[in-house]
Length: 136
Image (cartoon, rainbow, N blue to C red; front, side, top):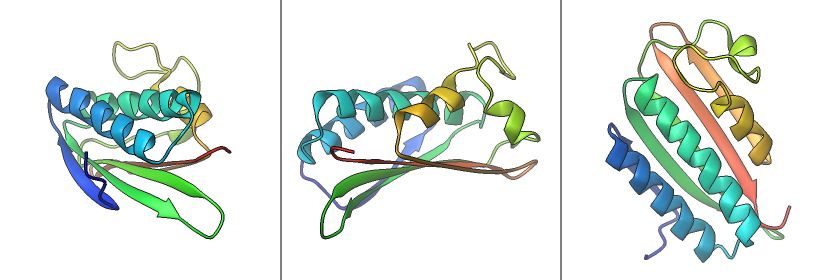
């Protein structure tokens, strides 16, 4: 895969979720993340891609390759324009779900990355931004 410093993928189907995992795998490999760090970022991306499709009604994943003078990282944005989340505190608790899942997607993803941000507004959608730095 030729590495672009940024890009976007649609998230509308199961196949798109698979493609998002493959894309994150290639990006983390090209950034020379350890196997453990690759797995953490791929797992978080998979969970958030699924949330975007299942609960948000579809959306997109955007990525940015980050670099400063001492470190490299990958930032992913998962955005939908679905119903939104009315209680973020509750949604971030282990075991809470509005559907049929295990309720670990948001809370588990938060534990797998170095930086986690979520914004949501009822009736307008949700945006989750995660960042993982190499070797941190």
